[in-house]
Length: 128
Image (cartoon, rainbow, N blue to C red; front, side, top):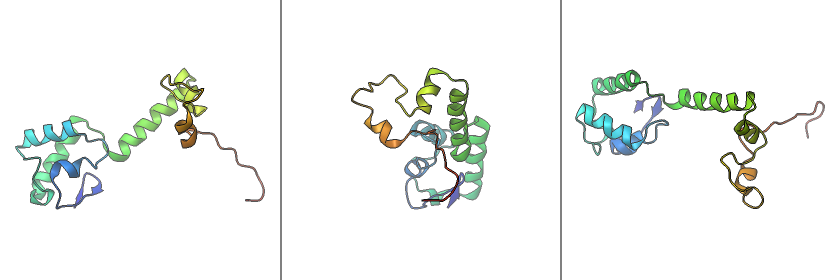
């Protein structure tokens, strides 16, 4: 079933299925179920099309950002940190830990991931 911009499975409980939508957490799902009088353990296939439209409208009215919109917002916030050259932005750009972690011995995970905004310079000419 296509719901909230994603193709979700019908035969799983509502609380489990909605957790797969980026931006919905357990608290928000339980709140949504209380507002509409739904059992969080009911399957998604039991909801009618009208109920689904009302749920989507409620999330929109609450100002909840989901999926690509939320990802774009997070990327923009990180890019703003880098652009204003704050301490966090410099650490992000250099692919170092941002939140005060030790770097002498324990930065292996961050170095392995390569950072989110690692600058890659491409050479002109042949591809190797």
